[in-house]
Image 1 (cartoon, one colour):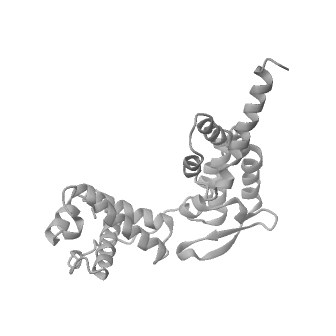
Image 2 (cartoon, rainbow, N blue to C red):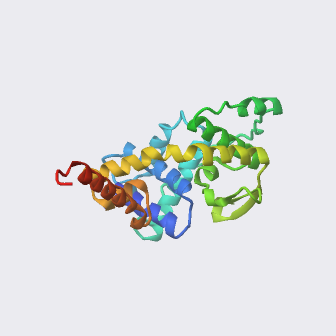
Image 3 (tube, rainbow, N blue to C red):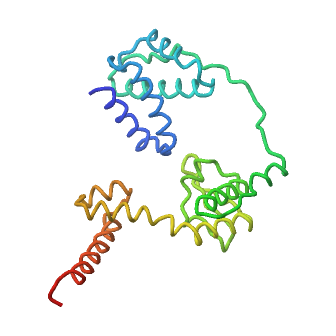
Length: 249
């Protein structure tokens, strides 16, 4: 196995056994990717404490929180391979976390929030941005929770949002009328048109000979039957072209 294989196996462990979220897995993966990039010609399972200390010195420009996260990621990584009996010792055992100062959270005044949310909606992008900001202010959702939020979990009739938070724990958060209005303007008024390029992307790939499975992977469809709609679109185009250009009518 090479370094990429080690990281891939570890991220599968985080997903299947520890049930970590995609964002958490991605952050662990990024920390390990930077480590493997630095030790491009070394087996990262056989790094010494000195190797690790030298690597951490290169992170001096990072915030203490980022360095602390990297140390935690590496410690968890090496503990996993100790459990598999691939290594005997964890080179992170003697590495100390940097001290994190306690900072009071910064916040905006009501006037500043009003200014932030005064967005003139004139296209799909401004409508989307306003909907996101109104939603975040109305609910206090984390950025990662907003990114992963599905439309089916927004109930505009009951004025609630079902959120899957840390540790795959679901919670129900109320939402105000202003945020609901902004969401409806985006979802009903602008989003359908913004999906046109996605459909065009898939249709043109299919028309130019791309395999349906490849298109499924690119679009992120879990079920290929969802992707097969594009075969119907291209078949309709073929029929139209046939009727238009076939000389014997």
